Image (cartoon, rainbow, N blue to C red; front, side):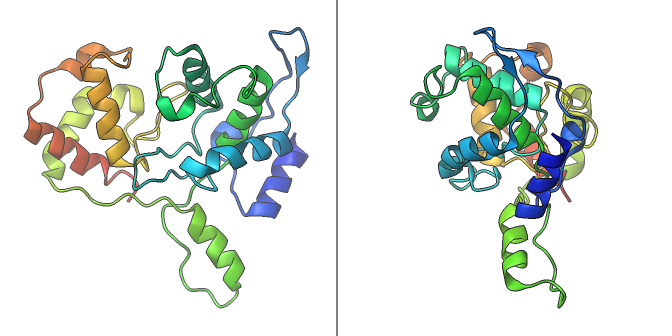
Length: 229
């Protein structure tokens, strides 16, 4: 697996995240077969995901489709299983999230493949030693979050009180708590609406449901949009 990860870096310029530095242990699949990570299979599956989430998993649709690269593989796999079971409803995922199109082996392969991608925060600076193709590839990988209007200091207080425990001070998330840093704010807004209306389950509902005004949310998004600075 380590050789496969090196192949990804050389072939695509991707950088491995901390989540993916250690080779996953083989495990037994529901059908009794043994799974071992296949980076090539993960890359092939990602080609289907790229239509919405971008070639390198950085998201798309003006922030409607989330960044899925660089997350913990356990979290990615958990969400894919939730789409398959319809515990998490998502219409665009319905044609793909089923055992025929996405068996457990594929869930694991694409989860670890995506976890191995660290999206740069900014496109590469002008560098005479870098050829045009390499610069273009790195630019495609970059995920930049537009600054949102609002009071950043006030937003940080809200973040520290209600979000930091699960999503970490730097917004990079934890094992099964997704990153908020470098995530598209339109997507995050939609997910908050789904949580607040009961259309998606949130484990730590008390913090989420703590009363917030429209101004509070604006300030929170303003702060979250700075986490990748």
